[in-house]
Length: 237
Image 1 (cartoon, one colour):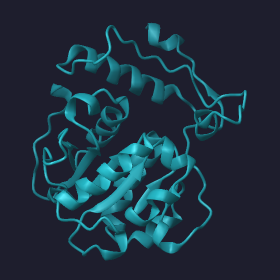
Image 2 (tube, rainbow, N blue to C red; image 1 turned 90 degrees about the vertical axis):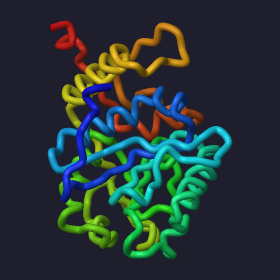
Image 3 (cartoon, rainbow, N blue to C red; image 1 turned 90 degrees about the horizontal axis):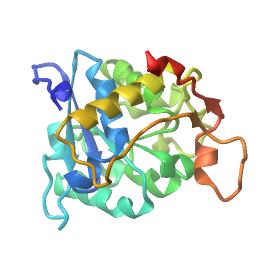
């Protein structure tokens, strides 16, 4: 994945993209690659993946090596492993007990959009919405806000649990043109790189977000709202 290589320079914002599983499983998640691609668009940002071993006894890197830690969360069963990753790095899982020199803990993902409260005591900021909007906003405001987490509550899609329950407007991409190309290019890079899929002959194509059916049992149909359809014709060029 040569496209991901970026050397650290003094003064850069160091961002960990943390996934609570081993590398082989984590690297199959398109979300972490998209987040890193978004981060790499900022010249003053250095990012790296952080994974946990199968036995839960080691991390690929300490989370304390970073200014910001972004947890990509997809399954409720991953919640205990997220807390474990923080403990192993010498970071209190409870946001209220963290020191000023601890990294900013940020979490996002479909299960948190559906119900952020189970992880609310453990995160500084919860991202509600599409990464294509939220990740650039986080990086753009970090030099000004730093770890004054109350400031982020004024941004669309940023939930700050320490302020108590409050209304958060979801941040979403209105035009999927950029998003579709981002996902398409990321999927191509993965297929050409050294990340081997646990599935045989996978193909990735996003045609819509949200769902017009609105079935009450379907979480994805609700967290993906509003419904947006993609124009995939330009990808033929």
